[in-house]
Image 1 (cartoon, rainbow, N blue to C red):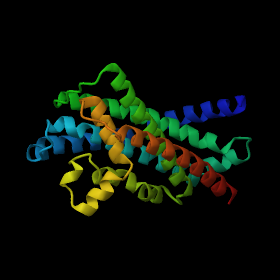
Image 2: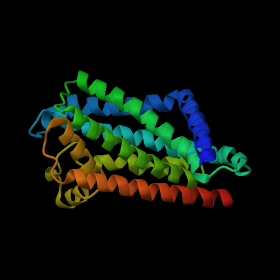
Image 3: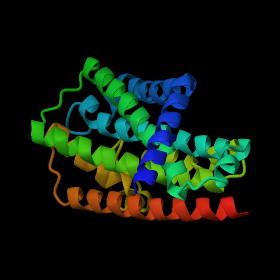
Length: 252
């Protein structure tokens, strides 16, 4: 266990240093959600009726969109290591398979924490006024961290099977697209029946509704438990799949 912790710390440090140098990825993971939030708040917000100030409605969805952009870059980082021989150099060492991926995942969580904080600060400047208590803030942040951890492990698994950085980007596209088919930008009851059914039963919608309820005081209902179940289940499945896929790829 001590060797595994030491190896994990070394790989986490390496991935964080790489993330600091790769400033364009960090900038894009912040700029794109900011542009989307500006577009929806100032261009479309006046025409969308959500029963509350639109900026308060849309910010939780933008936070999830920001997480998706940040996690998608994890798949490309893992694929880059696979393609450039970094993993081949580690295969001759007594390093556990999950340690290599752990470095990328922890760097992804740290990068997402920074970008999410920046986006949240910009949202406050645009008029976002959360009414959450300290406990509700802690619950919302905890759920977001759990979700980004699950999504980062999923991205790491996709990067392990991708044959190139470009294919890793293509495989992770659904993480960027799925928030648009949720309650992130408009209430689900305004959607056509088929799309509404999909939107209400996909994992991102209950996470958004829970975060929205915790931060703005709207009813959470059963969405909290559904969001927690989706996030924990996705984390367990993603960690297991990513580790197995990495082992399989490195045996080839």
